[in-house]
Length: 315
Length: 300
Image (cartoon, rainbow over all chains, first blue to last red):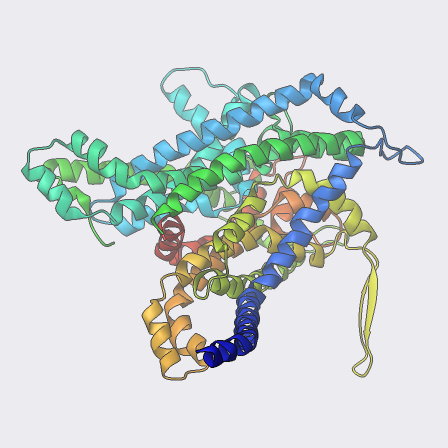
């Protein structure tokens, strides 16, 4: 007994050491495996961090300085730029216009896109051709789309839209100058509905037709089927469309530049800040504005990402 | 198209026919502005700037004029060359960076791959205008000179402003998050059992990629690349802000056709047609794949 007890007492530290060694070996293996897995990711991650994050660090620094084209030395001014900004009527106007453009164009494109998808999701002659016609607005350059609408649709003198309106006996209006905000939104909806249509169409085509048939057999009407079966199935697709649409539409610049040329009635934040950089040369102030927009975007992005992580829940 | 809900809903033939006709009308209305644009490209500048008309004698004169080159004026050839190289190289770069990243996020996922994926997407939420000023100053001051000794190549930049390289870098950063996101969902479609089976057979990593993964993901890679091409080809904001003198791209060339003197609508239309055709045709060809790629981002 005592012998054995002695032996085991002697052996214990040794065995313990071996276990530790083994554990360390396993750990280093795991670490190596971890790095093996991480390495393919690193180039993309580093590139993204350097190109997309570093400029914002600079912007943050500029926003606390009186940096402008004419000043000799850059000096720190604390929160002065930020204080100025909240009293700035034009900044608040631009923020409000940004919200209107984003919300209205995302919602309208979703509604129109869903309608288009429902129409296209049935058999008829030339289905593929009509789908091709409808996605084309999404493919063309925003600059081109804006010019077409401004000069050839909206124009009071030779625009098709006014020609049609006058055909019905009404008086034409120069849409782009009289209603710059809505003109921009119309063109955005025209370009983005096809994109929403593509997403919703993918959702409709993934539907389980046997469920629909069963509901039909049970005597459900079309509206009931849409509301209780189709819509819940489309939800993740509609959310995806909202998210992607919002990412791009909140940053709209080209349409505003071409259609309104910077009318104060349709100047969103990106346009406003870009203009301040080009014309105002007040880089400190411009950076403060940009930082506020960044903070607002981060808040919105968090909401958006929460939506997105709901999409991933099934994983 | 996989399934059709229309017939399931059991409408009678008349309703079905009427809805088909309605869809055609909506489709034609949607396309009308583009049809009109193409039409105007074949008109006289004066004809295009009068009351709308369908009757005119078509002419190729505008397209011929646009092909002419004047010293000091951005020509079509120059802008198209710039656009071509910028989009081509940035798309290749995006793919070279995004494919390994997608592999790391889907097939042999790193810990917390979801957080990494969200980081990529979150960069798309940052308003690019916030980075504009710093980008301008960084690009202005960036300069280097690299000599390759034996071959004698010299790679030299005094500034990155107004260079194609700057737009290549920015477009790569602009498209990378979307590409990583889409490609991850395509890579996630590769059945785990297939990879394990090929591992059992002792296939090397490269062999696995070649024989198992690539055949499954290649349509997705193509769709993703196409989307990068579309966004890069059509990009205007960064080009006009940071690249207005020297490496201008096609959207800038189109915008430059709007002049304050005389009638320009036919010329502008012809220019628009020339600048948009490549991407529109590519999009037409790949529309189904694009649907699939975007939708899988929602589900997988």
